Image 1 (spheres, rainbow, N blue to C red):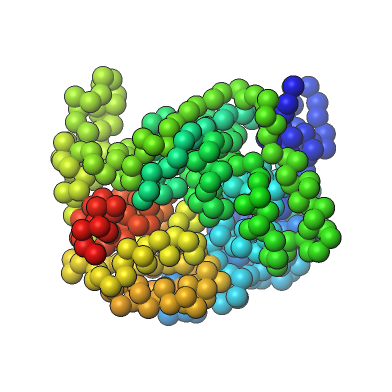
Image 2: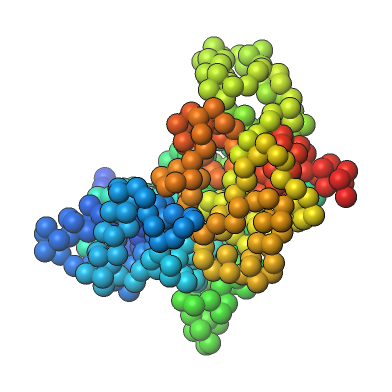
Length: 469
Ligand SMILES: CC(C)[C@H](C(=O)O)[C@@H](O)C(=O)O
Ligand code: SF4
């Protein structure tokens, strides 16, 4: 019987196995950022240990970095974390793309950009959205700080073998519907717990037609579906993306690697512990109206009403979410006014995302009630966007064009949405207080965020682009 890619990669990485115990897994790439590494490095120091494989580790700064007036960091905690990572990386010999470095950026954006992320690898980072790297056909997941220390000192990790799940996206995606809409549709259809205990492989025609950037958007949010990790089997699109990147194998080595990578794709007769199916044709641009990523609906819909739910617990959750979000039951989603727009985060801040948003914005102006910012995911993305003139399109429309970092995705820095204000955000989490205390987050795709910035309220970007040409 055939094997799926999850089983293939897992089996190749088990260094020790004993009945009734987790597997000891070899880790091929350890990504590090300033928030979840300080105690881990301190632990090594206290125990007189080294980083075992600095060559398989790579650090950057993203959560705390300011996105304007660099290099001044106003918040003392943020400053301390940034300075601590710089000191630790130097002391332990870990390569660092720190603030101002040309390779700096959100850890999940730079890994792929630099060619560090490759098919078949086991990749970890003290960060839940490490699942992003699964887009390349890697097993990539977030770990806690004590596990960060374990990986630093041993290059291995104890892990229970997760179950496997296939989420198949059948058919063709309608024009004007984005990868972000696919994953938001999956989470609103199957719920935030669907992937619990599983690694999910996204399969199907609609997935394999996507670019690597779009696959990253989907894998990024697999964690919001409860999954341990999400991945896509590598294909020619994967190989073409990696070729020529800084840390990718070069020349003949690349050809050898390619053959190996492609051999990892799930076999045709592979099976999974669970299978879920969604039809691409049925997906429309999605807007979240609630306080978790499953609370979203198509742009043509209304905010749900209590009558839409049978369970009292679901009705209570709806009431609570709508009270926080300041929304009425049954209100059309397009009637929701917004005051902030954030285009950024490891979900949607890559060059293709910025292009898609700029396409909608070109020649138009940000609504007078809206503050809109664009935060490229990495320094290099920012430079490439500038070389194409995208910065000019955004700035002319009234957007602020910032330096790269996590920024308004989680407000661990100066970029905060004020209490009671509403933000159309291309990020991945809409929990209470995520973008600032009392701030209200609506998750959308980059084109939907761009259209909302212009209109001052949500609109169906497909109609909007046609009507306002
Ligand atoms: C700060 C970090 C630990 C956190 C995570 O793990 O995801 C952050 O990146 C987030 O998105 O909430
Ligand atoms: S951009 Fe947001 S989701 Fe991604 S790593 Fe940073 S804080 Fe986490």
